[in-house]
Amino acid sequence: MLMLRAKEKGKKEEISSLLSYHKKIKPKLASRLKDFSEVREKDWFYELCFCLCTPQSKARRCDIAVSMLRERDFMNKSFNPSKCLIRNVRFHNHKAKYLMELKEKFPMIKDNVREAKQKKTDPKELREFLVNNVKGISYKEASHFLRNIGFRGLAILDRHILRNMLRYGAVDNLPKTLTKKEYLRLENEIKEFSKKVGIDMDELDLLFWSMETGEIFK
Image (cartoon, rainbow, N blue to C red; front, side, top):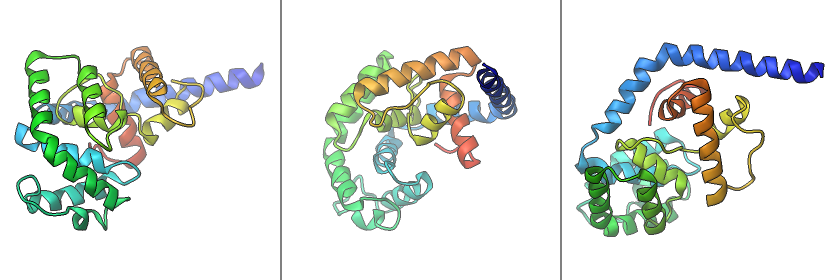
């Protein structure tokens, strides 16, 4: 019983610290989310390239790779993107193939995203479309892309977020693999935790990222 009480006390102290940190950087979080809402349509392609590169790779290194793709005008020119990825992105050959396939499909993807924005479609529907139509994209990457171009209310369940969900008691345990069923379950759990602590879920993602890396990136 004493151990249980100590554990509960520890969680409360951790959450209190989380709330204090959130209050401190809230303006920066709000500003970053505003930046995402203002991403121009012409940049959507490279945002999706970035998210497709991120699995098991560092975000900053992926950003360098995508900057190289942008400089070489990958969207409009025909070349194998592997050389831009090789030093920065893990599994660069596989992901290069995904990027080339993405480029072929992107006009259709762009039309669907534009329509969803205009009609204010539930982003979950658009996420399903992306998962089903973009090779190499899972629920995490699709959620990440949609957040980065202004959609809200989707959980980006990468290792940073999952680790902090466990740390702050949003979940009691984590699954070994993230199936669709488990992803959606954990997304609901973090939504409930967000309501409980009074931190917007989209801010919570950036907050956890900042705590893990020391910066607010994307």
